[in-house]
Length: 294
Length: 308
Image (cartoon, rainbow over all chains, first blue to last red):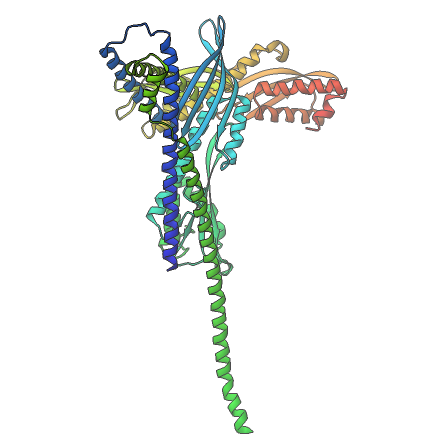
């Protein structure tokens, strides 16, 4: 009975999460389409008004334009896959221009693995003898980072130093790690539904392992993704143990004390996914904790 | 009497047995109660989670309902009929133009992210741009042949960047990862070079003598003057960038020709720490600000530095 209740709840959570994900995507798509549509028409008509006297394009040249657009769009989707960063809306405005200097306002809306961002920046471009140098003179970044304290600290530092490029690079690697963590957690949850629990969902930073035969004993895999001041992203994994006192007293070889260290060794030797897999198998699939101390 | 006591005596084991049973039972009960409590707590947590998710979903739904708006086609017709003398065909043409302009602009703007690319026959041309703080600096190009095994056909990456080594490690496994590592190296180099250039440009005011550097800019040496106990002391610095994927040094060795006293040693170690933590221009900006505040306060530098 109880078990089925749990299952019911867990299923409900899963469905809700899926639903939210789908809705978010749909919402973003709509937002983009609609705003583009309205804005496009406004702008397009404005542009066109001046040249209404021009002759209409031939149907061939229109077809060419369509073809070009298709190609550029596929180019764009290729680029977003390569960089992990998707621009959904972009506008550029030249605010000020003289002989060899010009100031541009850029507005970019986009996302990186479903982590949405909004950026406004001012670029000062100076034409030198050989090249054009661009300097970010003003930068504001809006990103939903309340869940990730490291990220929000990093973002404010990026804004302070106006380092837009570093922001993009670190965001992309941060989001990629979050994505990998999520997939890994879900993979284990799917493979070992009896053992793995994700009490706060798949996007949280921990996963709980429980041996069905050892009630009260749990291992918690904590996987944090840190960004330092220089924008370097590092995954930090820890294995915590939750063992009842009675069991601790039986632990003469101090296996439990050593577990976190052993986990670090496993991580170094096998990599993340494989290390988790090893721990899971040792703790939950074979006899008791005997295999942990290897 | 005898009979009675023996009767009581023979009752004792039974009573004890019963008590034991009771105790075991009560123990079991507490265990069970605890278990139930735990389960209830867990269920309560799950219920709360479900509620949170439901709220989130409902908020999203409301947002989407508000989004509503008109389908594009209707919008088009509306525009075409009411506002202008443009026909529907004309409006569509105008929109096509606009879309083209938009995609082109977006593709161009990708250089801001540090990595942009173009497909060329059987491969792609990747452009890695670099920046230090707000300054966009040099861009580098790689011409990749994408059929496995992926090959680098041409590139403009400087020879002192360990491109081959990075390619060996990542290129076949994960091209995104390869580009990201290479971009780190190029950006770190750009950052070190930027700092060294900045320093050289401001040489008269800060430097004493010339600045020496190697091509990868992971070894800088220079000298600068410090006011110390009402004298000018020359510090010779060697900055070693042990991690070439970073733009901050891992070692800052400072030497000076004065006889080293404890207070001078303090000064040296605080300067050395600053070089390891901050960009060059920030370090000297810090010295400058310090000098100014000191001259205002009229105290000696040493007493202040010893506070650091």
